[in-house]
Length: 479
Image (cartoon, rainbow, N blue to C red; front, side, top):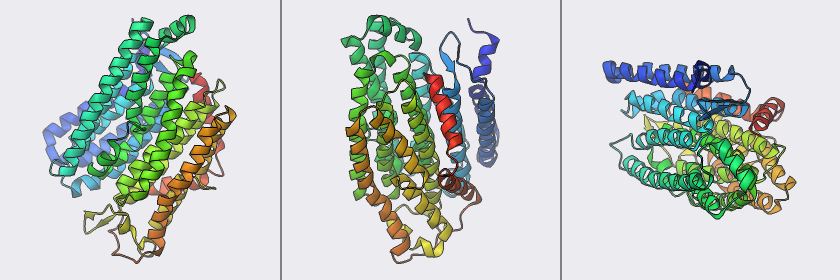
């Protein structure tokens, strides 16, 4: 039986759920006129949920009969996810109005997707995990196809839905094997069973299917095929959301699943993660070279960066250094990517959006501040010192080297060199190509996100200790 205290530990999720229902009622009564208020209301909910999460007790507590777990790890990753969702909401309002997509249910769906992510992060049972995934996924399917007047958007939404349904089927099939061979859906009892009885062919088969379903959520190779088309076809703020908060939540979920119930059979899942990491880094590096659409480029960039994060995950370590490296990597990736999408959303002339890399030509002359910020983000994503991205890659590669996974580290460094081509190409277009017409004035909301991301990417070099300490505490609570 659950107690009243149990609800304390899901208070951030309850805040978002109740708030989303209130926003839905407001939208029903006020219609399109309420979109500005609902967007601000949703942003306030995200901030409130993050504050509540921050003040939750950091001890490891299992609530609702072990279905949900609270610890420093879940608190950190929830706050990071909420930050990504809040930044997306901040950037979204002007875009919706300019595209005649100013429907408040857009905001409600985004809030419900965030609730699903938070349950994914704190799941301690296969059933809770699946419910969180589906709540997130169903909301994202609709958001991807929200612009019904766009053929690309409807196509991307349909493609995402079909492939997402396939991945959910694989995930459930794998879960059924795990349940059949261990006798439980609880992470704690699965871990106990595997510790006492060891692995079996059925468990390995189930874990392989589960891993396939989970890797789809971070668009890792070979489950990446939906990513470029969905990124290009979905409304740009939705693409920004896809590339940030869901990626953080999905990676947090994968770490929880592999390091909690399956900790004693790490030798079995480590092979899967190593293969997926190498394939993601290589494909993300080479496939991005041919892209001319900046949103498709960011899709392949995202695939590559999930591969780099998986390098840290594959470097299994009892001391938690590998998990710390992944947490740090996802933190830097989230903030840098938000900054890039703030720049992409600013690519407007006379209210019309542009997505070609060639449209950035001569930005240095017309918008020097945006050009400098975008340059910083490109260098950071490349992994060049002294920017934040360099330190993020340094820690994941160091974790791999420390565990003897030299191949992973070498492939990662070589893939970074290949990926540097398309990041540096953007910088070349910004500074050396013939100038085009200037973009419209940047909205204040975009300036806020751009400014924060730029400052973080720059000053992380000088003040990394706080984030490293938080990542270390989160990683230790998981172990």
